[in-house]
Length: 127
Image (tube, rainbow, N blue to C red; front, side, top):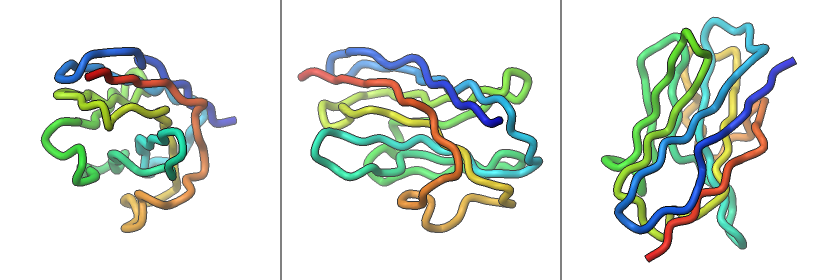
């Protein structure tokens, strides 16, 4: 049974930083895609960043390029999202998700309904 558990959300002022973590368990794929998504009240869910687990590729939404970094720690089965230079428009519930088996993240990863989802962690950025 796949489980994804996010942590690390919180409230910060604009310009601040947060690091989200996603502890994964039960995934048996060798290569798959994992991503971070967010959803603000009244808005549709959007893909923020993704990476090809078992490969080297990373993917970012234009709105976060240069500010957010996705990474993984294989030994800890944990996915991270380092968020710097946060803006009020980054305020949302952030979700971790996994999709596979896949040799790479699909081209429509930002809108794709991944196979497994975590419960989310809230990020609030004040101006």
